[in-house]
Length: 348
Image (cartoon, rainbow, N blue to C red; front, side, top):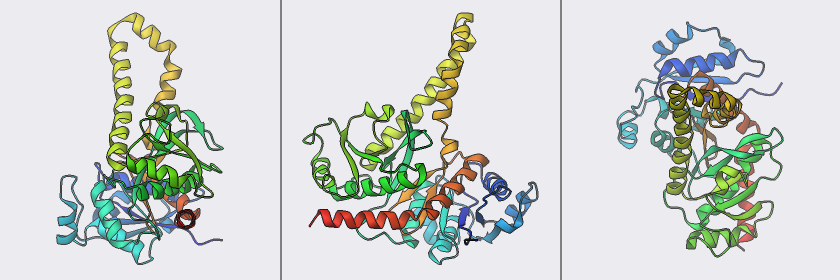
């Protein structure tokens, strides 16, 4: 039997605190293929929450972090310096020291990125790490027919150079291959036109390099209208643009739900129409349900880091832990490193 994968979970992070993290880990411990979860945080609170659930203690370990949790409105740099024993810092250190294989947190995004960047190493050839996120699409992706694709960067790097965009493409392709099972993911740059000469200087330079990277299924440029259509498996862009697009997609799904709810309450004919459309609305809700996706990977580091949504419920935490385990099992870091070697060859 292979050695079980160990995931350090920041149990104090997220809008709902310790209760959600502990329940998610407890649920996973009773499944057929559990993951060894290191619950990092206030050991008293964690044990109190564990006592409320059925779980297999073989697969759960509590690691005390005396520095408390980091609030969403706190400055991460200041907190990491003043409270080095806070839960996210201790969890990242466990990965650095080899006591865990991956890190998962639903806490503050900036704190997760900063703690991971301080304790983990960037892979050779990677200048900047990238935060990736899935988004719903009309087309299906991978052998399982997943209704979503991947976008990066969505916030870790505000301004991306051509070199950064190339590394994002390699990292996104490796992640999509491992998590979605797509043999050769189609990768594209997000631009204002599909032609190679469209876009910023960085996009045009990245386009030329990506054409020569062996093993990468580069599709060229795509426009904004291609995002919901799911034309490609991976869309690459700078973090500022990616974050704006991602928030817009989240907002659209919430607005559609609000409009449908309001219309249902207003008139009988609206209710009748919505009843007829109920199957389509349920499908839309499923496609845009971020809880099933686990979390956003921070790519480019030598270990797996998954940033779960701040509003994660136990199901989302459980899925984030499973995604982290799958990424470790699929040797995500090794795949990215091999992809970056192909970039080096293309630049010679």
